[in-house]
Image (tube, rainbow, N blue to C red; front, side, top):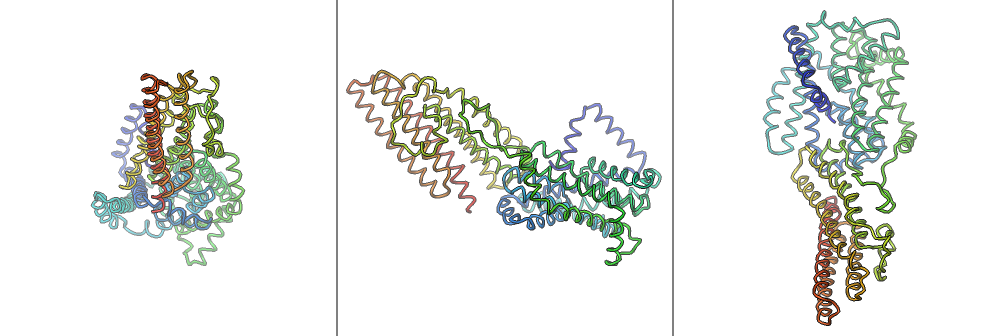
Length: 602
């Protein structure tokens, strides 16, 4: 979840009495110390600016994200570059990490690509320290922020998603600049009230203490940039020693892992793999950086002299250190990436669909839906498509069971292709109850889909809104097909082994036609675009021909006395249920497979 959202959720979860007490405390602090209020306001503006940057970024990437990611993550080096550049643009490694977890959970990228993006994001986030050190502490950013805020508000009210996204980006940058300016003013008047030097100790004890302070500050504010801003400002004001500031920057990097850890709880195993990779990278980098901190400080001094950085420009040297130790972590982890991928995939294997019979499976629930995918409209729609394919597979199995088809029919491809064989009457023990299977396997997954849809609050482009509507209609069609099969089984259960040959034969024909429909649709799901569309049209025509022939047969059997009116109407009703099964399944398949393939091709 975004940084600002996680803070908001924790505040909402507080008991009213504690929340009132906390608010009262903040009000007293604001009135009691003007410098402290400026500092807190600056931090709040900074975090709010990052939230607007996140929203603006998501608005720009809507619609073509899958093709964009495919092009930008086809190799490790492209993934590293993608992670570094996007983090430099949005100034939030946490956002890029969260999005990467969502992309991987939705199957939009591979684990190797996701790890590359996260590693690149750690390097890209160092640009923030350079911007603050070079510009933020030397220029009156409020003068730049004001016109950006005004223009951002104007654009953000536009109906176009692109213009609105641009407005949110301007608002985000403007609020970041204004937050930096407020924090500078707050620190300038807080020499006595907040002096970080009071925590100073000697040797490694001091370094570890300030690393812990940096970690804690990042965990609380959910922003390593805000922690770095505080560190740089304190360093520039003489409230923090140089080596202690380096340790605090290492701690700020380590603190960003909390965001990935929180996201991992709401992701699937694929997302958890990437969260674990992010934690391993930051933890290992921090440990190595702290272990050789004096040596890294010497390297910074050497590089500073080569780059012409003044020896007294401690803030620039801190920014250089931040880049150097993240680059060191990248060099350490890149050779280990293949091993890391194998270990994570073995430790947290991706979920697979069970292959045993439906009656032996536990109650089904959604396989692909997860809260991490809700972060972005494209990932939410992607996992919804995957879940619809899962629901379609379950629906086929339940319908096959309702028609008393062989237990392995939907899993055995040769069995589905052999449509000329005559269906036998199954023994009583092999007849499964469709209503029980519906409640065990269909209703739970459909309920998860409805609940996921209700939690989707991302802004959708018009084509995405249409896709979401199509997906929900597809889910409903699959459920309606299963319900029609439940109704058909009511008479099938009574008449499948009837002593009247015409009645028994009629239900055998209905079962065989249902077998044909399921077989064609199962084969069509592996096709795409025009081929699947033609198969659906041919199936519709075949259904119409079967219905016409079946009705003629019933009328002849009525005239000959082979069936009475009661039996004939039962067969006609069940013919209608069979037609409903075919119509609903075809409509769902047209949405899930055919139109999805055409959208991807377009």
